[in-house]
Amino acid sequence: MKVLMFNTQPYELETFAKIADELNVQIDHTTEALTIDNVDKTKDYDAITIQQHGDLEGEDLYKRLAENGIKQISLRSTGYEIIDLDLADKYNLKVTNVPGYSPRSVSELVLADTMALLRRLKDYSKREERNDFSWTGGQAREIHNLTVGVIGAGTIGSASARIFRALGARVLAYDPVQRTDLADTVEYVDVNYLLSESDVVTMHTPLTPEMDHFMNFERFKKMKNDAIFINASRGGVVDTDALVAALESGEIGAAGIDVFDGEAGITSVDLGDKGYDNDNLKALIAMDNVIVTPHIAFFTDVAVHNMALFSVRDAIKIANGQKALYQVN
Image 1 (cartoon, helix red, strand yellow):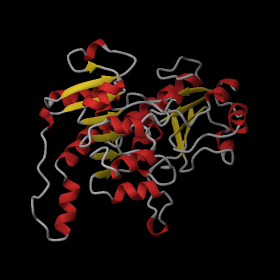
Image 2 (image 1 turned 45 degrees about the vertical axis):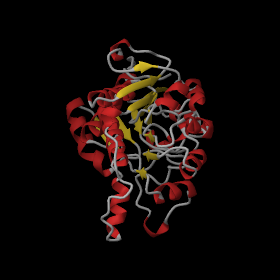
Image 3 (image 1 turned 90 degrees about the horizontal axis):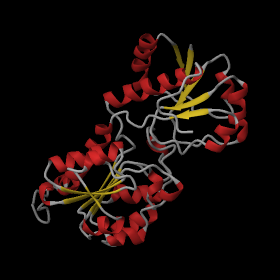
Image 4 (image 1 turned 45 degrees about the horizontal axis):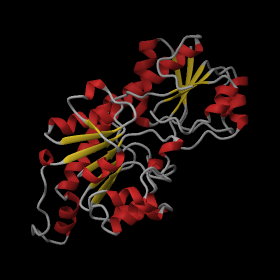
């Protein structure tokens, strides 16, 4: 069995070697993202995995994968919005993702952002650069006195809910599926109540058509003026123009942003003197009450290993004509 890994990163290579030995397969890799220009690299391989931000565009790409004998596309990530599922179905390509690589990895970053914003650590750090060690305006709130709203209480959202509940917070959840195992952790409510009642709102939803720019200016206006907004799900679930406007106008108090519109070509890249063209991102980074991270919520040792392992396992299953564990189409 031969598997080709696209868009590999240096931090993945040691994991790939271990998985190849564990599963007794040949794993080759390229640093290139999968495109129509390099799709023929898949010839002579049984399966592929990808991890990239840009869409897989154009019918020819899907057609060529099928012509090259590939039966699947396994993502080393949770989100699969980069795949055209209609074209995948047309060419009988099974698509898999990794929904449960390490729910704690994301939820721990959400907690870290929340604590840093509550304690105004970025603001204090900038003050100290000016030799200002005063306490003015820095009195913090404690988590056990807060209400945390979780939009999307699935695998990752439920992990975040449990962490905040363990710290004593009241936790509200908005999700069409009400899980019985969260009965002692969350109160299920409608989204308007969640936004108006929560001191912290954290997003944990996929980027579906229904969730595209779900957080718009009207929804930000429903939040408390001192509330913290966290997004570690997908950039597209937030209207970034609206987020910047809500922060600048004082409709919300602070934000922790790990994902954002237009992140392809920015996150995971050292742009050096080249810089980047994203005015909203520049505005967010400049704000003392905003923490921006480059899509690193998943980036832990456990998550990196599981993302590679689970994707390769499913790729092998499909190549062998078996049912994958995490098939999405």
